[in-house]
Amino acid sequence: MGTVRDPADGEVVDQVVVTTFPAPHSFTGEDVAEISAHGNPVVLGRVLGVLLRGGARAAEAGEFARRAFLNGKLDLLGVEAMAQVLAAATPGQARVAANQLEGLPTRRLSAIRARLLDHHVRLEATLNFPEDAIEEIDERRLARDLAGVLGDLERFAAAARHGGLVAGGLPVVLLGRPNTGKSSLLNALLGRERAIVTEIPGTTRDTLEETLTVGDLPVKLIDTAGLRAAADRVEALGMARTRAALDGAFLALPVYDGAEPLGADDREVARVVREAGVALVSVVNKADLPRRAAVEELGPGPVVRVSALTGEGVPDLLAAIRAEAGRRGLERLEELVLLGAQQSEALERARQAVRRALDGLGSIYHDMLSVELEEAIRQLGLVTGEDVDPHTLDRIFERFCIGK
Ligand SMILES: Nc1nc2c(ncn2[C@@H]2O[C@H](COP(=O)(O)OP(=O)(O)OP(=O)(O)O)[C@@H](O)[C@H]2O)c(=O)[nH]1
Ligand SMILES: [Mg+2]
Image (cartoon, rainbow, N blue to C red; front, side, top):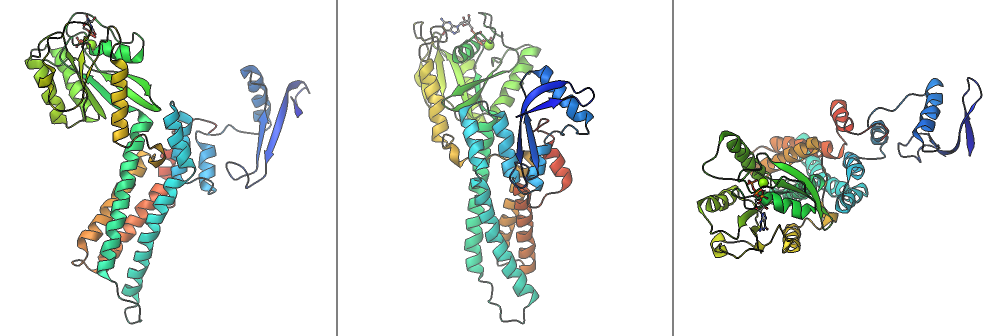
């Protein structure tokens, strides 16, 4: 407990608590003092003013995380996890990030890197000291081991793709011919009137995104412009966006009007989803009206009947979305990995180098093999941060806000 006074006139600014963390037992690994003042922004501003006039300066964006990294308190996977801990909007996102902060993904990757290092050292030894009685490289054993490493890297990359989906929200796309009730369904799922709904076909002209929590997971629900053959220019542009939305979709929800017989436009919708190769749950809307759509025609995949008007069937649709997430392993949050864009690229380059080494075994010289392993080791170092240049670090830390 203490008092902050303005040295200029000795006036009391606030009663505060000062906590000190002697190095290396602080977040950054440096000597740190934290001042807890009363939360009022006016008071905080005055306390800061006193400190700044006394020679302190404000931290840059991400400066604390950067210092923690440079002092070996946090690796790059930890940095990414921290960014996500700060940004998490659902319990699932927070759990993935907290798990990564505990260091499991780092240990997985370090173990892979250690295996590659081991082979690299042996190869180099036989190349550099051929006259010494160093054991020969057993190519069969090396092939077996590299295949194992490749499998582990691919599993890690899949976990990172899933982690990215959870971090950004699983994109779930509502699509269908005009007037089937896509926007009404978006509103029903959100539980509020977000999108404009009218009886006029072609009401929605652009894609619209809203986030919803399903189970513990964030879902990015995307409402789209209706798809139909005869469309004006604005509608055509909206339809191009619908197709683009399908590209990155986790799940497509083609919406059909159950009160009308299925027509050519509906069959076109089913075809577009099939061609995009996206997982789908077909939705037959307007269950409050007498049914005239022959749902058997909708082909393979789950079908859920709902009424956006009365809310009937909406819990079943939410359960179907959740089941799809479970089926794809997204609910096993402890296995997911969060990577930044540069880290994902480095991981992919590492995978390619191991692939080339494996494919080349038996036909390329051992010095080439050694170069590929070295490349893979270096790229994995970029993922964990063991081997990263200052410019890349700038790009990583500038995403943080001031004071983190
Ligand atoms: N009876 C009934 N009417 C519905 C239901 N869902 C939507 N409607 C009506 O269907 C019409 C079209 O609804 P929208 O939600 O605008 O349909 P949309 O698919 O978004 O249409 P576009 O944006 O034009 O492609 C509106 O008049 C809604 O009130 C439902 O479950 N039951
Ligand atoms: Mg609409």
